[in-house]
Length: 148
Image 1 (cartoon, helix red, strand yellow):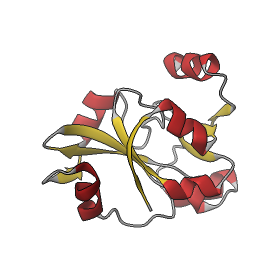
Image 2 (image 1 turned 120 degrees about the vertical axis):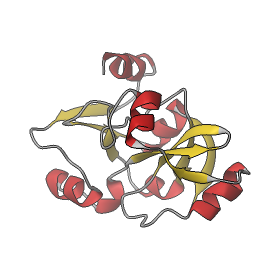
Image 3 (image 1 turned 135 degrees about the vertical axis):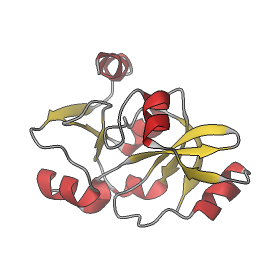
């Protein structure tokens, strides 16, 4: 997490890292824990295509991922969720803790996150959450497309 904090500080980002005793596993749990709207939760999924891995940062109220939309955005034939082992190899963290900031992974962003001043997502470390502005997620990742 030191690397993340250094990057956020270097870029003069308005953020907060919140430590909690309970592991948060779903958008609903996160919304209840932080007392926020479910849409403010921003899980990062790792997808696998024939061109490699990429991130997908969603608003917690997005619902099921439409893989055909993702295939169109990326101009690929196949898209699927990366396995837990692949997620760990690509990000260095386990599913449920993947950081919102992954500069080295091309990322698709849910534009509905912009409804909120702040969103909440992973830091790469279990039992910690990053509170950050959606515009800064966009600034710090390599965004290759948008959904919604």
